Amino acid sequence: MADRVLEQAWRARVGGPVAGVDEVGRGPLAGPVVAAAVILPDDRIIGGLADSKALSARRRQEIAAVLHQDALVSIAEATVEEIDRLNILHAAMLAMSRAIAGLAIQAAAVLVDGNRLPPDLAMPGEAVVKGDAKVAAIAAASIVAKVHRDALMSELAEIHPGYGFERHAGYPTRQHRQALAALGPCPVHRRSFQPVRDLIIQEDTINH
Image (cartoon, rainbow, N blue to C red):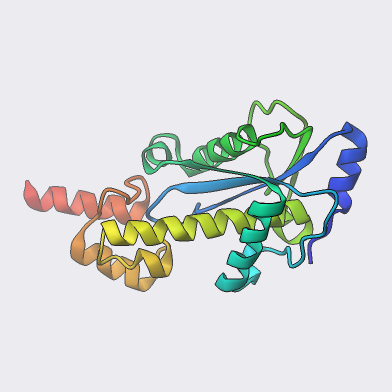
């Protein structure tokens, strides 16, 4: 289970609240990339904080509901258009920057999952490899972002039926690839990702 040791060390250093930050959705062929920033409460313990991928969907939803009630939470996105224009890494950094800026109270420092910090932060921070499994605030952010994005992809499944977004959240499963080949890309598919780009090139070749 993730702990608060690193967060507390940073809090002692900066004398203010420390936010955990994570994003979800770098790998899918469709949909936005979603980031969350979370400042955990000082006066209560929120149990079960772990890497969102290690939790069941139901458990993620339960913990996310507690976090929205008891912690400071900010969620932000980078759109499919931004992903295609900037590339997925820069879009993920943009989503994280937006989540940090959206907190109701500015964090004095941030702890970010991965090996790099978003550029031009207004506060100091540390990138923590596998932070979602080690740092409670980052785990909280990973859970909130995952629950939000899964719900969003279920909504997109109703707008763009046939792709199975509600089941695979846009990730390149065999079912998704088969649907993509049969139906062609829809407006929320990432044109810069190779399986989608290859289909577009193929369609253009046939049409011309």
